Length: 321
Image 1 (cartoon, rainbow, N blue to C red):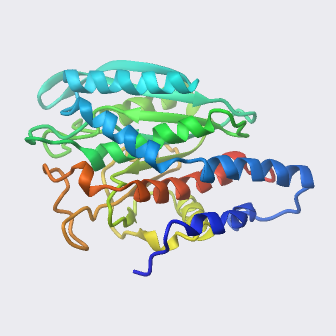
Image 2: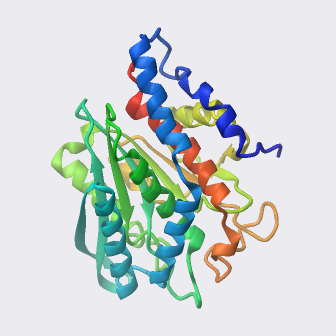
Image 3: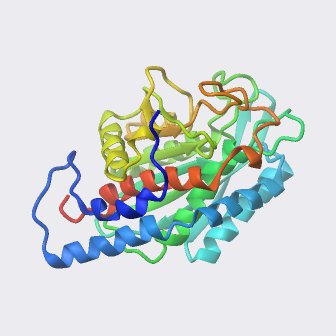
């Protein structure tokens, strides 16, 4: 795979002003162009991969953080505290749900940046870890996506998106009995059901999930069970920022936190690296004690964030949409 070095992002910043091919192009006024230039600067250049990496380091201090444990509770409060420090409107949604091991308490953390059009996009990550693994940090699964999402919240705080942005940190993604009915995806299923039951589902434009996206040898493998239109936005965005070589479309489904949103009719997509291993193509670090900080990189966090932030620009900031 002919991958492009991260420094090209800065060379390609000007390309970020191009229209989305998926939505069509219209001539922009000078004022709109200047607004988008400012947004691009904040979304790409100001994303600090070293800060995102430190966010992951801070999160793994609460390991193990599998759902229903003290570690998960501490991790949720830590995330809430970070969002509050950034000035994000945030809350913790604590709820109980049945599991194969009995009723457990879960904690979703949700932050919001309101927009002007009454609609929202959801950026998602889970923060819990798989149970029963000795010395498990969960640096990639689920630290990497959580670190990226926290850094995104920091840089997005002072922007004014057209479409509001929801930062959703899910508890209970990991299953304890192999994703049998009602096992795993507790936090995302809870939120999706809330949106359906309240009628707010109609105001959600898209749900973008990140999971296991810090691998030093990054290969974003997008599962088949995702909304086709969002796949188009993803591929266009990756191409725009010169990072298309890092994205591949899978021909198989993956059970992940985007699935409950698809099931209630919300467009959703999963950006996941399901080749996290000791050699190309392998996934042998997944759910093992090898999921550690030395096997993720700040550069991979930047690559993933750059692609997602360009998607956000198209979905939440594009003025001619």
